[in-house]
Image 1 (cartoon, one colour):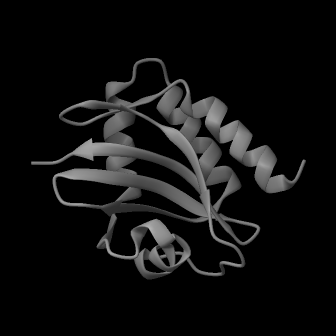
Image 2 (cartoon, helix red, strand yellow):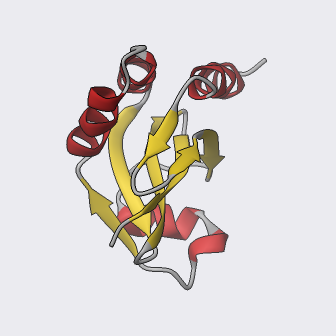
Length: 124
């Protein structure tokens, strides 16, 4: 099993223990896209993800968004997931698409791939 596959599997196992709470509650799932990525920002993320070609991708605060989830989570599962992402991925960022019903990606780089978690949020 490759390093990316191992890390992605671990992220998915950790993500199974969390939910993303905004105005609604959403599942959190492991996410991987791209190859040979050396940078990670809104533009490189959009370029690596064909499904987002017609979407606007914006950066958000990884720390603020994840901290808000940690504060709601008494089990500590969000803190465990956050630590794993920060310890195993580089250039960790939070990216969003959409306007009110938003896709939210907490991702970083691993061996040229964009890896992390994907969920949804309602922001009004």
